[in-house]
Image 1: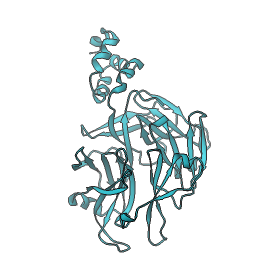
Image 2: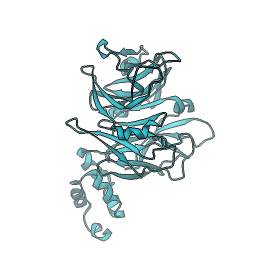
Image 3: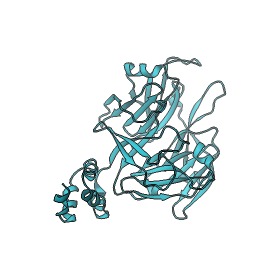
Image 4: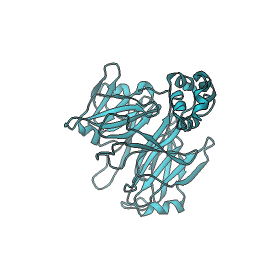
Length: 364
């Protein structure tokens, strides 16, 4: 196989393989050294600029603050092919690196400093091209308590907690710090349409009361207060869900997921898991999905579950289940629920993750 392609001009190889999907390109890169070199070159990457990304679901390592193995791997699930994949991260020059987020084909990781101090650095990389960039160091408290928000616009990066926000300035290669002044620790904040939206608990120690808060990036950079995102017509939308959390949907849509309470009592049990969607252009809620009862029975015995994903795919995990539940919605709004088996690792079952749209043309 290697001899066949080594006899062809590289531009011919590029023209042949530019006609297939990125998923197939990645498979072909593993066939031989000649193909790997040809299909990783900058000229071929330029040809693939208009190619659709390869949508994957990435897992975060189970132990955030433990050192990883000498050759760490990023585990990903291909929902279209229903297969698990691995991307090596051993090209990164750090003793340990913990993947936490992705946007625009780039992967973001917390990395330990090679020195003896406790500082952390955010690293942005493309695991397909092996390019990486290290952002200025931050104290370890930011990696423990801050939420990292990223998007593909100018490789924007924000680290947020209830007291402050750090905004990475590409032009100065430095972190800009602003006051956030949220009423409580932000729950599952998301970056959407030049604004940050987060859930905050404004209730008492005995009873939670969740509200949506929103702040534009422009307001954040002038330390202006957050605004409550609410309408009188919403009624008890936050009261029907137990432990709600947010995910970014498509375009102007956000998703809110939680256990559907069977009553309004303080310790009410849940009858299923509900996915709601909020259209930010109309500020109207709708139901996006409802976990089938036979699937929910596996989650009933767990005191909590984890949610990750976004767009039209949401993954659910819980202790002692050993697999993931996946919700998908097509263009017509038809939903499908299925199990994902063969989850790698031997954690506690509370798997966490994020969406990763793999691209060869993304550069840190």
